[in-house]
Length: 470
Image 1: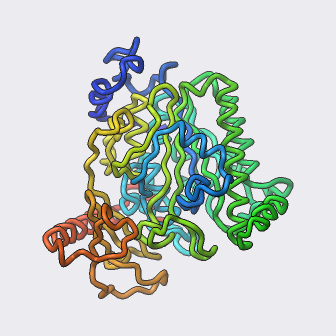
Image 2 (image 1 turned 180 degrees about the vertical axis):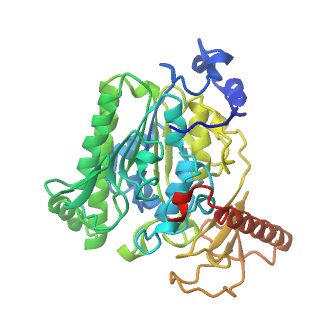
């Protein structure tokens, strides 16, 4: 297992100062500064659940009319809910890279999503450190159930990236819901006798049962509702009867099965007496896939593949029973902030091998009025990055966008002008306010260019480990 250099998590002092007294009862500063390598019984378990291509509007609470996600709706009411949560990218693999490392995906080497066409651009560099690496070093049992999508082959397998256990699949190739290639550790076999989402639920529950006596980190990476659109026919029929078209009916059926499984997992935590000491996080990797048709998404502009709000805004619910007071938070947080936040909550130090781009938002979890003033960036195009396309920066209420042009891999520099949006007054990104705020537009444009230069330098840095070049 890797050895890391560590830096103390600064926000632990904010946590100590802002937590309710009952949270800290019996826990002194020494406990809050526990060293990595000694996971104690007081450290929480963590379950990180990720949906795939789920829109904010896909949750039943989104339109208030259909009850298709009763378990997630209930879970959301028990959680801290973030109204301004963002993925690390508008597509799958880079978003997961940001989630796993706390770094912008370009720095990690994961910049696109097709593992067959671009194997070197869809895998985490060997010198990157994952949250599983760090928690494993701290004594946690670490498991991934479901979709990996950040590399395959020697050195890039989940078991080489900090996970003790892997039950899932590497990407989207040949994965269907009633027939799919499935890895148990390093052994791959075809499964044809069950529905994928139910299978992942069963395996996640099994992981929790086997590791209930010690701290664990479980990443449950669901495939639903990613295409192909497949679900049990009897559930699809119910949504067709409600008047939805076949595509939307199937998507909602897929989500219902996932919701049912999440409910079963949460019930197991209760039954095992683990709910009070388990942090459960739910999010989606990016917005809805336009190929699957239009559906309700709060009128947000754009979809998956675009850095508009509809492509990168995601649901984010975080529950730690009896520790966090449920309610809404309006501070902006993103996937790069999740790793340092989770480590902060687990009293595990952040590694210094690669500087994380995110920062812990534990103070926000404890106090709705706490500040979390950040500037965050996004960019994606197919194949090698061309930063004139599909890039964005947000700070405060303003977001500057270099517009999406094409999903083609053959790109020339874009000549489309940058657009400035005031998200506080225009959350659907319908009005360019560059003329009203020219100084803001110029400043954000400069910062976006500086970020593009920075992450590109990091992306092409010398390959210190030979396996990265193969």
